[in-house]
Length: 535
Image (cartoon, rainbow, N blue to C red; front, top):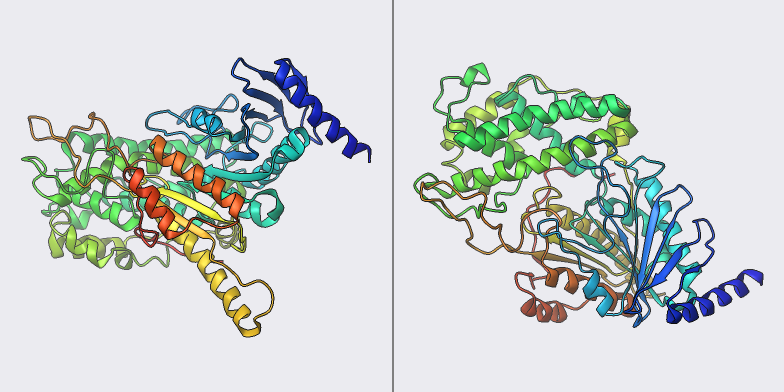
């Protein structure tokens, strides 16, 4: 009774003080009471800290219509050196990493409330997903404590790593959101994606630098482990910098069996990308255009892989190392990997020239199959594959959006998510059809994709690709979407939260006609991830 009365008083008082434009602090169950201010536009901004000291932010406009969005940011490093360590709440709404522009203004004008927090748990970031599931709950509890009945619908949404947080979150706390949004997000288990990142290191160790240990060097906790992983990253960075200058034209120096062969280093680079799933389109390379120095489309794709691989391995190192602190050393094992099976038959044909023909492909796959394998630790491997374990049983409307050529969280994560949900849905539907009792299951997942222009590579007078030109306007990079694409996704989430259903095919097609490069084909499927460990 007292708690209910306190909420009522808090809600009324907050409304009055917002209108007056003064400071207000409202108590929360666990987090520190938020401190709020109202600016001249009657936009209320509240800040506070969670029980573990992490900061949070709320922004609610004067025309708030009752839908509150709770943002879950992506991966952040615990230690400096590769990327900057956050100093607080950096993102409060979806933002494009390529332009730095978020959609806070657009969401305020639409009457949405927004909330975000710094996903650090007592200074630790990295793969702290278990902690962040509970932190997100605390943020929502705090917002409900402050705004009460003003919040009519809740949307949990986020980017990148957030895909492996929101999925188990909504399964554990199904009443905490009315719709779920995943932008460029990882689908649990992250092992499916990180295994490919580890493969990049291994394959490069065979063809370019035998000193590379890659993921086999991960597992030591703290700064020492971070330093060891960065040392592995720097070896790959050195290779990529050399190839940026010569485009991998020199012949292979490794392994000994291929030294002196006509196979250039760029063929091994292309093979590495194709085996691990690195996109063959990048910010500047469309995989099609040619010039005097890029005489064939497979060479264009090779440069695309070169451009993409830097971010793929850098974040892969940080994420892989932080995961290894949970699993222990030895999570990577390739003793059962069939390298030839990882090369898609269509890719083998399409990129045949860049791979030095059938003979080059056979020679490279042959030496790769005979190279010494990495044997992992059974216990660590089991923990690795079970990270962020999810059942995919949530029936909340869930909308994903991915770039066609995301260079970090490959677009296949979205189709993997759809597959997981589809399997659960079909089982539920089959069970319902046998009895025809209860509510009939509905399909409530939608995957959207931002596509690239068909041609966008620009060349210098020398014939070399201009890698400093403006990037493609859509479909490339990680967490890089146009304002219209992000706003369309957010609006769909708001509609879904109210209706309880994802938008119809007709509605998606209607929106796609108004939002450039947003794919209106809800059945579009990108390239699959290379691994499916299942559970």
